[in-house]
Length: 418
Ligand SMILES: [Zn+2]
Image 1 (cartoon, protein in one colour):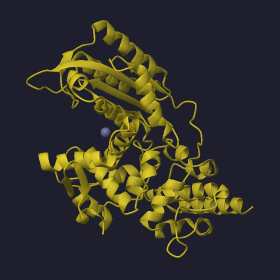
Image 2 (tube, rainbow, N blue to C red):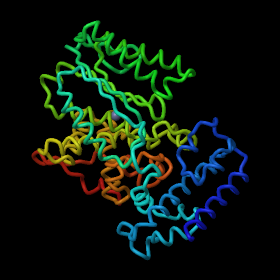
Image 3 (cartoon, protein in one colour):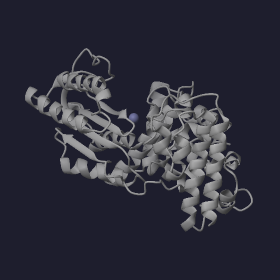
């Protein structure tokens, strides 16, 4: 069978590269590679001596391997012309190195068309929501379920808690160690204890956080959460405790409950949940290395996508505004009111969302890769999008070129990637 032969050839290529490289090593035997690649490649992945080059090749081969599987059933490849863009059949018959020769758009289409090896949500990918706020639990469950339903695959176990806080304490004071402001406390001491008990029980039952070597980490986290509750912190955060163990914490201020439209809360909720659906936030190796470089794409891609997604889904729930207009308005405000020009300077979710829109307009990114979460399966933000490419540099310098006409916002012609 052709498929088997090709798979074997890719396998052989990895073995050769793996054996041939002995320069740099990844940290440990963490399941980074073993869990990320498909079963056919488990044997070479178990080698603890994978260099960065091997890892990069593994990533590329993973893309191609998934593509192969996908194309067993698929006839066509999204809108590629024969000359400029290789057909999937051509792709399949080429070596993995040809991935390098694909244009950004072809890579973007690859990301979009790749099915995940786990076609169904694994039984462990569960969401638990502890709602102590005045918002309806049924509504919250419904909105989160809608957001989750858009993901192509799900891996993380998520514990979320939503709690009310009162008035902002003046002068403003930050909670120690976290960027949340102190508010008057609404939860009673008994409620705080109950909430803490539920969180502790959940985390101890978690495969990763409940393990013995996470004992100190667990204690630290629990102390942080208790402080948020006891000091009225308006938390709005997702934390990646382990690659597949995520928490979402939202402290809803009195101001938000009483003076802001419901859509602001929906937006916040969906934004934080989107982070918990981003599967590669904890990725090590080459991804981490690139992520830590100056001007890396990671922060604005991660935040921008969460904002992009939450505006789209909130709009879908309420059916009452144009989400792109809202995305542009938010970025316009950030630039006009705060004078921000850096894509990763201030409210980078707002600037980043427009950055992603510019990539979509240039057909370097497919919107659905944001909406179904697949953009965040394999660190595409660093391993596929090159921060130093002219396109990415252009985005960095033009996300704020937005016109306002009445209440309609639009990108200036010079904002578009040439
Ligand atoms: Zn965020």
